[in-house]
Image 1 (cartoon, rainbow, N blue to C red):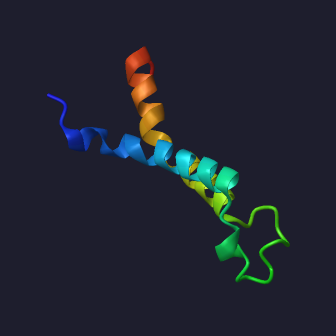
Image 2: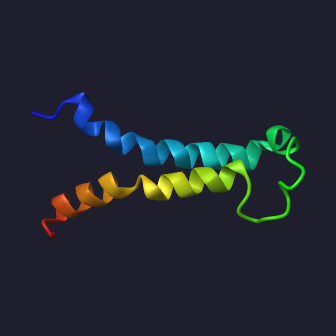
Image 3: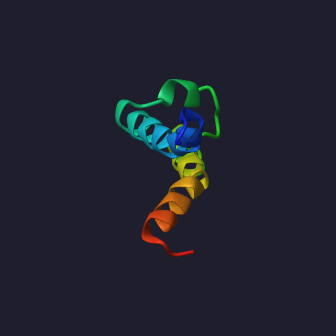
Length: 72
């Protein structure tokens, strides 16, 4: 029996992907303007942070795909 809590770890990565997309398209520049060095690094910014968080939280998806394919 699959419960809702079993699917909860799968929600993080797509949520961060949507947040990265929305931040990149709509723009999250108002908060970044408060920091004077925000434009110095290409890795600074909320969209980049959301992409990285989505990658770091992709492990449950990898496990699910491996289980479905039957390979470990």
